[in-house]
Image (cartoon, rainbow, N blue to C red; front, side, top):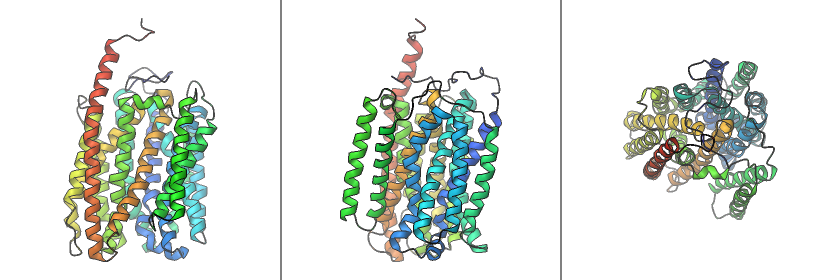
Length: 483
């Protein structure tokens, strides 16, 4: 059975506390840069959807895939690449992710139609998964104690900064030149990131678990079927194809749990779900994806279609939220050490709920600054939650499985995001697509998102108490080795 390391404990072979580990600067800078690039690319089509769809001759269903396809690659690959990185080397998988992102970005840049573009975006998602899972795994292996909290906070800040800069950069480039140029920029950045990866320290688990092929097939198949059903469901939830995909998703994910429960070296150790810190990490990430990323991903469309803003102007308004998220996550390390990550996560989710409620009451005449207060409050909550989730992701698993912990956390986040984007879209457009109908529908979606965030905050409190009790008992009761 997997044992849980003390939060902040050094991994086997790590330098003593206070000694700067080799490659520490690269282990801080490169995962942050990769996360920034990955999230900028993830959010880029939010601001260029009209131009992209026109250039690819994409119809209504194809537009949905243009927006959602990267989430499919991300969610399906995150846990798998995390396990592979722990076994075969985090630096190696990080570099492979950078190279794959460059190649798939070329496909997107030259795509002649929507099918080729969507295929490229799915592969971009898998490549981004490799960068995210290994990047946080590298941080978890390299740093300990306060240095780990600081590094995890910086990594979490890059999530907010990437969401802030992605739509602005893509919209600005599209306005000056062509929407395809963004993907060539991504190619250049990915090549530079791959070349720089040689400066990273290599790390892997002390003992390999080997390829969990049954777990890999059932998990990837189940998540892919679920997210494909969610994507197609936006054009009709009772269509036979959607129902068959949902049934296949349930069957495959149940099979995944059954397979993992019987394996001696599973890709995902189900015993971790008995750990309060792991439940906080995965559950908090799922809520963030459902209720925060889902809201933010639809906000630009509402501002353009209902409030009359240009895509570039709407991207700058969205940056109020994501910019606040970045600043708060960056400074979260300065909070008192006695404030636990679980309580701060609960506070972050609660603030996100308050911010979303503050944005209700929109109508077609609402000026952009009518959103500002809610965006600031929700951004503060998101930044606090991102920093705590990054910390919990690496502290909630044994150090030698840091990439698996990151993979599980981010799988929950981006599966939740795909579901959240679909849910908010369905509610927003449920009454029609006129400006008044959109603002009315988005107001309902904001209330639903706020309720989900509030429930997540409430659920985090007893888990945090269990975590504190577990830590106390672990400190008092000696381990078998100590006996």
